Image 1 (cartoon, rainbow, N blue to C red):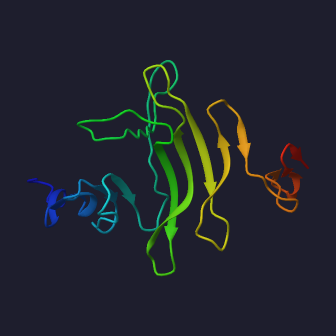
Image 2 (image 1 turned 90 degrees about the vertical axis):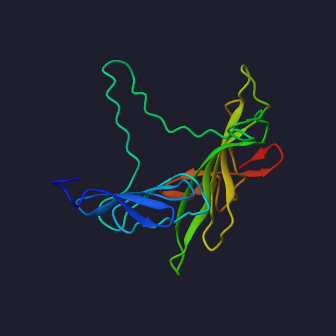
Image 3 (image 1 turned 120 degrees about the vertical axis):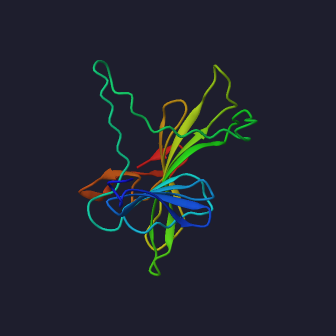
Length: 193
């Protein structure tokens, strides 16, 4: 731009380019169809995936922010996860057990490697889908300390039931924030304590 030389497109590397404002990298696009938003290095953290990443070193929190001024009625902001089997050109019918989407938390190991946790909220189909049948459930998973193995701790099923893990006497599945060893747990078939 004639009067703004530190704002515009630039080449990051082979098959990738970026957009900078005020001489600072803002967003980059790579050959794997990733779009990475960030205020630091123009690198692509998940080169084997396709999607959008938001990256920031330090400073204020990073997030995905949506604002919709609808004037009247309820806002229409949404994050939509859609897991259709097949391809975009030839999608197939969603079957029972198919993943419809996953929200996953991740962090970094001691060596700085990005680790995707097994802790997640999963959206799962519970029947073969049609225009009149879209059964699904939500599964909430956490990772106990000193392990890297996820465990389902809570399910909201397709009939509206809230299903908890069994729990134990010392760690009941339904408990209290300020008294975690007091609550309800499943002793055995048709028994609670």
